[in-house]
Image (tube, rainbow, N blue to C red; front, side, top):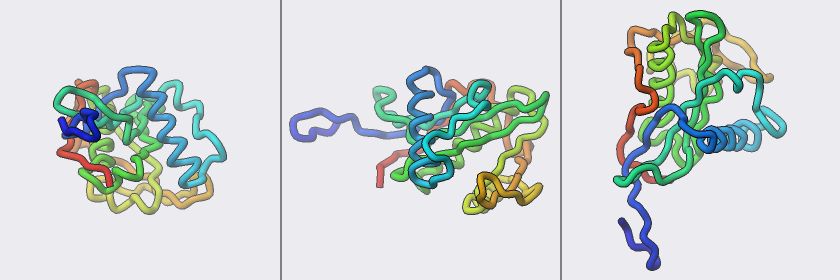
Length: 182
């Protein structure tokens, strides 16, 4: 613990990427998505909620201290099966203070694909914003087509599943290293 003006504040040591386990976490993930896709990027006017949300699994990045979860959701992605064996990832969002920091985005992608793979995924796809294509390529994704989504250039990409071992414990998820917000 760190003493800060006579208030004990937990030392944040990790970020756990895992399946959201409560309505509260899903709500925080949706709030982060609104911040990123509505206010920051202005892709949607006020809310990015759509019909996929009803069927999607939500993965979150949650700050942790040695004593357990302490912070808000700082990253999220959702995954869904569109037809048997075909899965999609969408709405990847990381809080601005944690972007390019300890691999939160790439770890969300890894858990997303591995979780779907553990549920029988044969092909995993995503519409990726142009700016993020190089990161996905480093993570063994290949462009299938170039498309406009929401009037912005995207690549439809698919993951090479041989680089994503099936994960059957997404509630436990993955842990990234020591974090500090910028």
